[in-house]
Length: 488
Image (cartoon, rainbow, N blue to C red; front, top):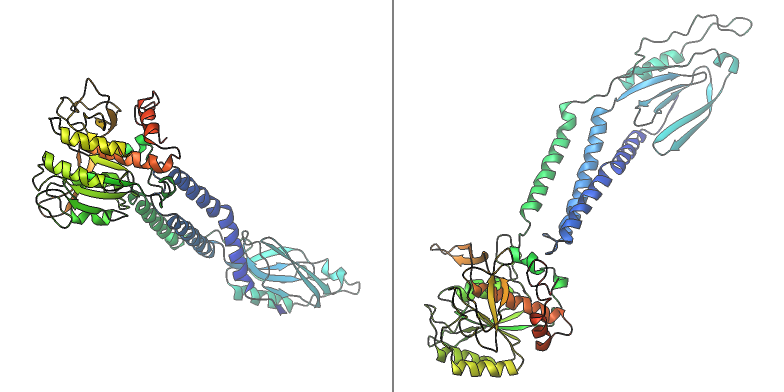
């Protein structure tokens, strides 16, 4: 009697489980995650979560699936033993049609083992046994496979049969009608499936569902105009991070609570008579204009800037109630003339033309500064400074690519259509909580256009004011959906 390695049972189980995983869970998870990544990474705004999370999710899913397969096979497969009576050997082994395994204990009657050869081919293991005994006697034994549910019963039956000594006549023939086969089942137990078998599967489905829901609910839904304009938050599409675009925002200021939203902390200058030394905004208008240009938020349900890598310079030209005058605007523009700004955003307007401000705009234009101004939303003529020949006048565009019904128009100057309808803004309620609200105005269209031009400056190698003017005046200004199509 010879006992082989007991650990072989677990090795076979692992090999079988690995095989099942390799042909089922592995390709499924690979295709599933690959499909999700394809959709996520090729979307205009790139992946909603870092790729490391996808990798962790992929490995976690496969590990859990592999462990479940081991549990399932261990619980569900017939775990019984058999005695296989052959011409020259008895084999007691752990039997399974899926394991492909038939060897645990070898018992040889009437003789000793000459050689035992284990042959493994993938998951199938076979045993070839040669014995020292009379072939004439061996050939008279029928071949039967009998099954037991307990290993001990199988071994006891094999040992009892091993002690059998047949009666042989003088010619060497067995006189007994048949060997004394023990009472045993001749059909293997059926595949066993119980509720316990599926507990890991239920847990796996629940955990996978929770992870899937978590990934889906954590996806950032960017504003509608991102896709319309071809704007993306993917870092590699924002241009060279070291090539900073300096944008001055002439408005009501900037609230200090908004500072964490920016990659680069804005500078601050107060041109009003209030002369505040630190960030402040009495109306919240300037704060939202700045956030629409450069918010770098990566949180869900937040406000997202078109160009989060720009460096903002806040020039406060409106007092705490949102009022301004020629002297204050002139002071702010004069401050800008002494700086090296690339773009100036002016999301405000006045009804009267002003010679002092016009001269400031002329000097800034001659320095190569891009001047953007909102046109107003009263169904009237362009407000000033949008009506100036030195500024780009930005009008409100709706979600269908059409001119908003309330935006101002002009009979003497062409405006630039840019999304300004249903724009998510971040405001603070009476309890001081930050809430998202949607609003429509050319002020926000102007801020989005400023961010858009900032992207052009770093992504377009031959960018210049002449190039921009040519593009804006050409027939290719807008794409087939009537939105600015230069980035696409």
